[in-house]
Image (cartoon, rainbow, N blue to C red; front, side, top):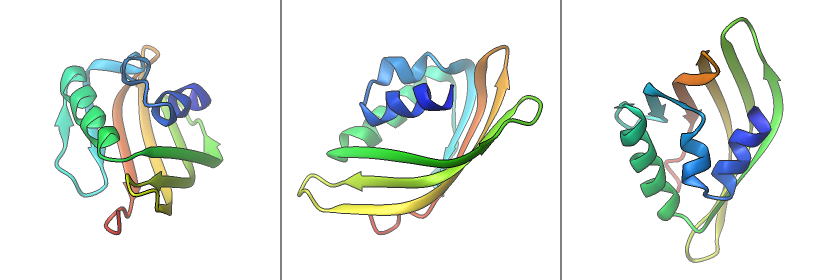
Length: 112
C-alpha cells in the first residue's frame, strides 16, 4: 500500500491518490489547517501538487501496528524554477476497512 500511495503522489495522479481515502477522511499536512472529507482532501492535495513542479518520496522505514501505517523518509520537492528542496518526513495513517481514515504528514516545508 505504501509504495502505491507514494507512487500516486509522486506522479501527481490525484484520482489514484483519492482511491486510498475513506469518504470521511481527516487530513493534516504540516501546520496547514485540517481538511475533512475525501473530495476536500483531493482538492487540497491537488492544489498543492499544482504549486510545485515535482515531488519524490524515499521511504526509509515503515511500521504497521494494528490499524495504523507509520512511515518516515525523505521527500524532495521541485519548484517551478527547477530548484529543489529535500526534507525529512514522518506520516501516520489510520486504516479502516482498507482505506485511509486519518492521514497526518509531519514535515517542515517552510523553506518551500
